Image (cartoon, rainbow, N blue to C red; front, side, top):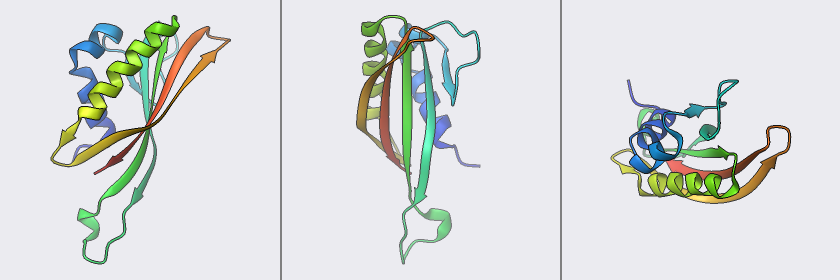
Length: 126
């Protein structure tokens, strides 16, 4: 069974010393568990669209995925440090079956939770 894009992303982030120094093991798919203390990272595969080809079998088709990675922290600069570390890891990620690059990044603030969030979108081909 092949590895999912989420598994590739989680593994890359969880095995990077800079990311681990900032968030420990708090790297979650879709949503952080209730009660998780900041800082943390959440990643989600927003879309996955097969690239059509007249010569490629369905089993070997490339898939263009849009990935969103959100970095949460109490302090603005801390959220950005996590975002920078994530960007460095994912921008350098090149395996035999994935290519990934950043397409958009934005700053957000959650008034209710009082958390800063750096939300970054990536495109990935696998």
